Length: 283
Ligand code: NAP
Image (cartoon, rainbow, N blue to C red):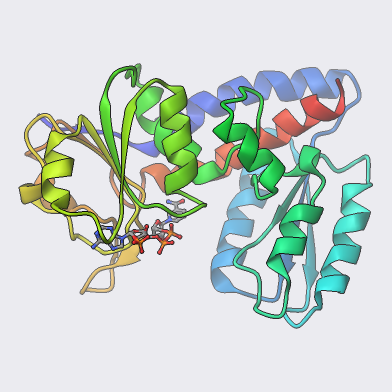
């Protein structure tokens, strides 16, 4: 029987740990707070923002949205970030990306206060992941992908894991996180030869290639564990992962659904980093 790895129980476990920390901070007079910076009215930014506001309210984390026009200049965005970087009441800053073309993204990622960088965009924080530093900020999506299986008690040590994605937001940080868990990691991409063989050979396949239902039974065997990070529309216009879930659900050992899998943990992970930020700023 295939085990379905749902995101909600994992998010609930993380929230339970967070609740205790938040109570302890508040007892000391510290009110954890996230600042969300949105340029314009992008629907996917607004939908993520709504989730952040809802979950932070439920956890008793303060939040504030700073919405500036999509046409803003780099200087205007940096001026806002400077204010937030220096506001002692704000512990974590999230700037929605991708940024519009006129913005110098490199200046922005380097400008964010590294101690408030809850989405881990500053190269200083990315470097800390590569160094395997335990208290570093981490991008929410790869951390959610690691946790959805790890929190069930799965031990990555010595396991062969394949990652289909080499982007800076998913594949590369995920590879480092899994290396830090002592897994043996293979990173795949569009030029990988015989992806099927690599996937079949892996104990766990993490996929984030963004092609609905591309991975069918021919990529897996009965022992495969499939962690699906991909989110795209299938031919019928329904949200789907990279894996052909219906074909695999009675075949592989474990699989994450889309929606309801990795994506449903990311907001909680992001807010958990706000608590990490509080700790960094109150050492
Ligand atoms: P991306 O930058 O376009 O990366 C896609 C990766 O997949 C690239 O490394 C690409 O290889 C590889 N790829 C594409 N087609 C392939 C193929 N046929 N065989 C092997 N590899 C292939 O996209 P991204 O921003 O990282 O996002 C990837 C997916 O994750 C999307 O579906 C996105 O919606 C999803 N996502 C989900 C969450 C979440 O919270 N669940 C968050 C972020 C992203 P090359 O490098 O060679 O091009």
